[in-house]
Amino acid sequence: MAPAAKALDPARLSPWVDPLPLPSLVKGTGMRPDPQDATRQIPFYRIEIEEIYQKVHRDLPPTRMWGFNGTSPGPIFETRSGQGLMVEWANRLPAKHFLPIDHTLCGAEPEKPEVRCVVHLHGGRTPAASDGYPEDWVVPGKSFTCHYPNRQDAALLFYHDHTMGINRLNIYAGLQGLFVIRDDAEDALNLPKERYEIPLMLCDRFLRADGQLEYPVSGDEKKPWVPEVYSNVMLVNGALAPYLDVEPRKYRFRVMNGSNSRFFRLSLGELLEMQIIGGDQGLLQAPVKTKRVLLTPAERTDIVFDFSQYAGQKIVLRSDSFDILQFRVAKTPVTDESALPAMLRRVERIPEANAIQTRRLTLDETMNDVQESMGMLLNKTPWHAPVTEKPALSTTEIWELVNLTEDTHPIHLHMVRFQLLDRRRFDVFDFQDTGELRYTGRPIPPAAEEAGWKDTIRCEKGYVTRIIVPFEGYAGRYVWHCHLLEHEDNEMMRPYEVLPT
Image 1 (tube, one colour):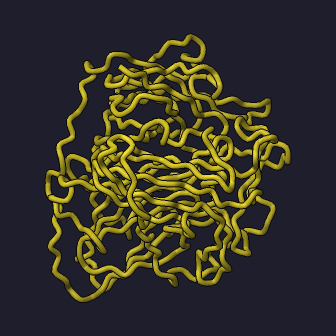
Image 2 (tube, rainbow, N blue to C red; image 1 turned 180 degrees about the vertical axis):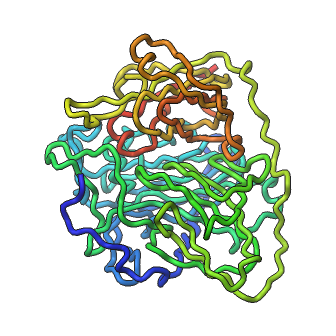
Image 3 (cartoon, rainbow, N blue to C red; image 1 turned 120 degrees about the vertical axis):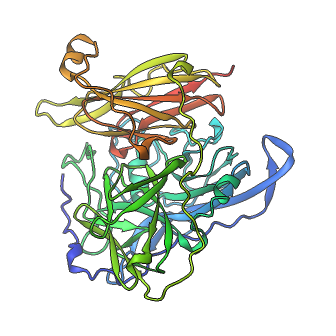
């Protein structure tokens, strides 16, 4: 599974020689009528999806990537709750892919164009026609327009490619960016803002010695798909081992895991205390003190860290044995008018009695004769089978996610936000034999940092993970899937349909 090309040895590069790149704010190109209210005008944006060459380190040549408006990650969208906007996504990519396509995968058949794209706003409460359905892709030279109403609480979302069968390749090439929604309630808290609020998109990538991207393959030219990708280089905002000059005061870090497969276990310095104030879908009820943050692919975390005690020092953000980013704390004291209140916002827990239905859904893996993974499924059902999950709009359901595999899966539901009820260990083999759940442990309630609103949930092996989901927003066809991108591209994804009431 290892790439044949010579790998870059990151240890031979000097760290902390490049400043941290900060994504630019995307600029609008005018106004358009609101599709849901023709009497209103809303901002309009045009984003070009294109091949770029971008330096990730001072001592490496520019790396071939795909990006949005000339950068990867793409520029940041910033809007307010209830302020809708429209985006024209224009595919200006070349006709041939530069990463290895597995034509045996569903959606990546040989007769399909090599290069296709469609964009999904992850975490967005979006009408189905604008959600980025995996089969609604366009080829180079074509574009598509999406309407994002943003009728939801303040949160850090992100946009990314979602093309059936090659999603993992398009995102690995660089097609993702951040999307911030703000609201009055969050503004009133006086959290660190403007230059003291720093976006951090983290991902790992495999770089060759010449600084170019390499995507690992299986060794079988006809079936190059691999079940997971773990790489040799950690990037933050598209840079390798950059630094950030900070003042001795509080900062807010909006962090997102943009890796295909890698989990991050983030810490600062020698396990310095930080405070988590939010997750996928916005603020928690109260700050959570911690020394480590676990972040699976697609999850976000919102961290406040106070540098005032570390004037003149250098502090490193790391994950396990990987150093990611160095903070250089200035020596001169400054005035800090920001605040970190004990109460951030009220997060009402949804009573289980509100659910009108409970669905039991399995996470499955198929193996070959030598116990190598051949692919993943949800509820043992392939992508093109008829839709089986059809919740009604404005109702609430409980989904029991029964993990029968040897992996931990981050499961994402489009359009909705939900709450974690609990996780509970069960006898996997007994379930496989009888179809009955025999629990072997007590229910584990959500940790404080998972007690807010979520859109991606960590489903650990050997556990039933229960979530409670209000289907609020829009009727139409959406998807739910594993956000380990190699799994998603090999049919660990299913459509679901929200029925009108």
